[in-house]
Amino acid sequence: MRCTTLLALLTGVMLYLVMGALVFGTLEFPEEKSAFDTLRKTKNAFLYNNSCVTEDEFKDLVKGVVSAVEAGLDVNNLPANFTSRWDLASAFFFCGTIITTIGFGNLSPRTWYGQLFCVCYALVGIPMFGILLAGVGDHMGTVLRRAVAKIETLFLKRKVRPTTVRVISAVLSILIGCLIFLAVPTVVFQKVEKWSFLESLYFVVITLTTVGFGDYVP
Image 1 (cartoon, one colour):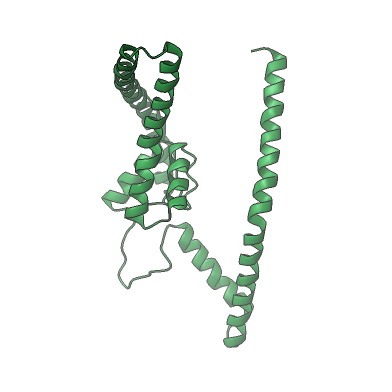
Image 2: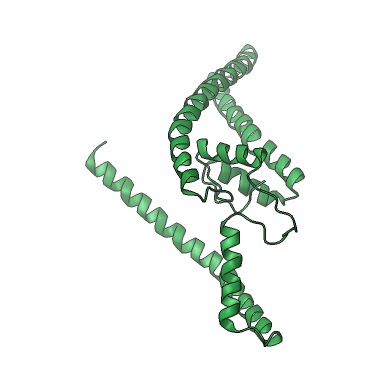
């Protein structure tokens, strides 16, 4: 790739980042400001209604809650008996987020030996999954090409122009891909997780692209 092409591409990426930053800032700032105002009102109301609690004690309470959330505990439902989030199913799901590089962040190791094992596990698991993904993708591509080829043959037998047939096959390939990787998972998560259609679509795209913000997790 030429230096001029690389510089042009770099400039385009930087402009795209700036544009995204401006749009997200404009869209998300009002909600953030509203949340801040609500939190401040809640704090003031709590301190007013509980005069025996000082502001420093309230801050210590908040720090304790934040620390518990960062450790992966569900503070909305704190039962009397401890229930680990590192059961087999959750740990298996966490391992899946490692090797797929999604990394939702809702669950992560907190001990140094857990973090050390996570490093080794990722270094081995990510390439292994990459090889598997390449093999599955190649197999699915072969199956899809055969299916599209049969459809093209049917159209050619009906004496449809080859250019039109190629356009139809390209559109069909895109539609099949969208159906398998977008439409079906979106509907499944919408029904199972009781999310809205937009929330389900958002989760599917964020997961499929391995961005994995972690704000929505099954």
